[in-house]
Length: 142
Image 1 (cartoon, rainbow, N blue to C red):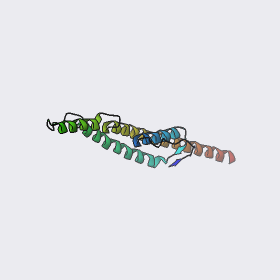
Image 2: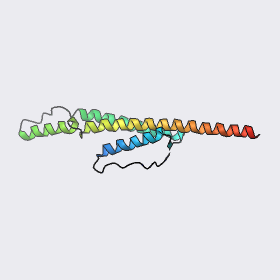
Image 3: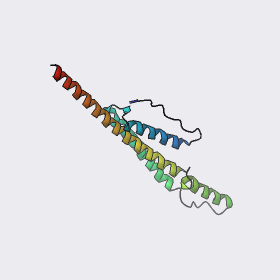
Image 4: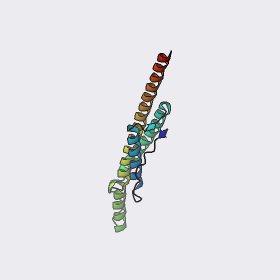
């Protein structure tokens, strides 16, 4: 795989890891759409399938996290009630929660797999055009 270096900006240092990943995938997708990424069509589908498999595992994790987004009967003491509330918040109560980050992760993986496949199609089309051009040149020179 080859990606042209277009200069580009940098991500803020304080940006959460999920945000950094989304930004990187967004830049990759933009570069792929602009034809700046070359991926061997034979290996692209294998890469995309591996990313799809990671997304399936992330969806399974998301489903398991959803079970935490419920009242956990830990007891009625103040500590037990606070632990139950914190479990809910960690699971799905804030923008930094596991559920929110898993949603972003799954979305990013889906976008990445699609960008890899699209780039491979563009690479293959460009290769076919180049081959056709060489073929025409060979016919004209013969």
